[in-house]
Every structure is written in structure tokens, then in C-alpha cells.
Length: 105
Image (cartoon, rainbow, N blue to C red; front, side):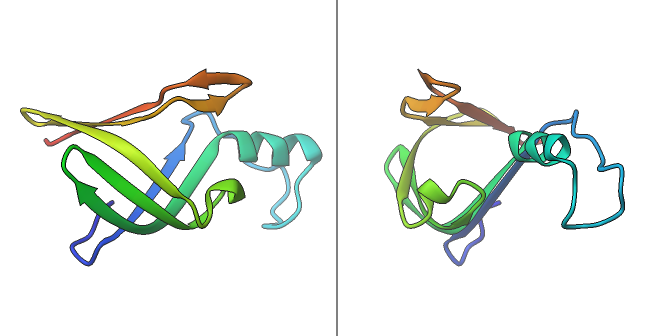
């Protein structure tokens, strides 16, 4: 989500997330907590458009290493599709490029 005031928010969640067996918001088994951490990712902050890039200035996030850091995404707009791509980043012990594709419906 990008708003006109210059703020953005992203939340990415696996469709295979599992509910905790108990009803306590802050207590799960170590396995439940690990699975929850591995299947949800979010961050928010200000953004700035620069030609074919968008710069995210991370203010809050589930990956604390990014808080206070600028994250650059490459933008490509084709028809009704917008693709945001990372430069190579470390994921699962490998340098990988992530792509997020938005489609206007």
C-alpha cells in the first residue's frame, strides 16, 4: 500500500500459515513461533520515487536489520502490471532477487 502522503506499508504472508493450538496471543510453542516468524514479513515507512526506482525508508518492520535503512526497489510498469524487484539480497543463505508483481484489476 502506498498513500499520497508518502507512506507505504507491505505485509507478505504465506497461505499455509497455521493457527496456534492455544488461544494466547503472546504464547505459542517454539515450533508455532518459528513457523509464524518464517511465514510473515512486513515493514512500513516513507517512500520516494526516483525515475524507475522506489526508495523505502524503513521505520518499522518484522526484520529489524532493515529498520532505519533505505531499501531500493526497481520498478517496471507494463500495461496493468507493476513489478517491484530487489537487488540481490541474502535469503536462505543465498543471494537472491525477489520480485513482487501487482496487477490492476
